[in-house]
Length: 313
Image (cartoon, rainbow, N blue to C red; front, side, top):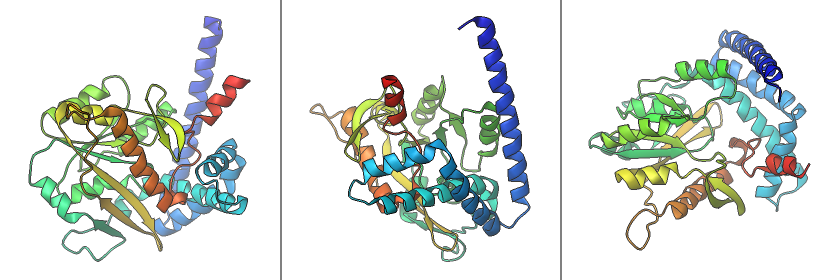
């Protein structure tokens, strides 16, 4: 492309991103004027109405049909719509995180948050790491670091920045909690995580996104590429690995789960087998998604359907 045209295109994209971000921030500020339950309900309904108008709705249905070939079209459509509602709630929950997290370790039976794996939280807090926690884009995963902080367990999480740079800056600034910080997945991020683990600290990683240079694995029986970062870090620093997830419950409640340690597969030499470990991570996430299929991000191109389609054109 002509350098001058490229420069104009970049400026146009920057202007579009700015307008989009300002519009989004304005809507979120209006939403913040409402009580949390009302705001979440509005976001849920709005997403169910607007989501199907996006080209990603078709992708969500294709992904659901790929993952659940035994289900009929009515179930797939209903699940896709419910998924849009969940995505609307994720956006709104970003605004209400401080209001939503009312968990008190001294009164665990009260409030909208319940926690399983409390003994593991406490046990890890009392001893030195390194520890790696992993999760997927299920439920309100933003609550997990806040839940860990409630038990005095701090960690730094790696996250993929939104493509919109203005939204990315706001997200990174707002996602800092008493439980640690977030590191955007860009150049230098791996060294930051490595330094934390080397010092006996804890890190968190989302493991359910596509990664073009990843290890060839399967997800719901179909070929995908998975980021090998977690098993490589675990192997390098002899870190223990723990699955964690958030589940949305009826009546605006949430369950945070810290599950028992996952022992990653090892090779004949006793070293962590990176490829087999990537598959093990996928298997854990797949099990979670099968339990609550409406709470995973089906409009994410995990199987690179759109990429393959563009190559054929």
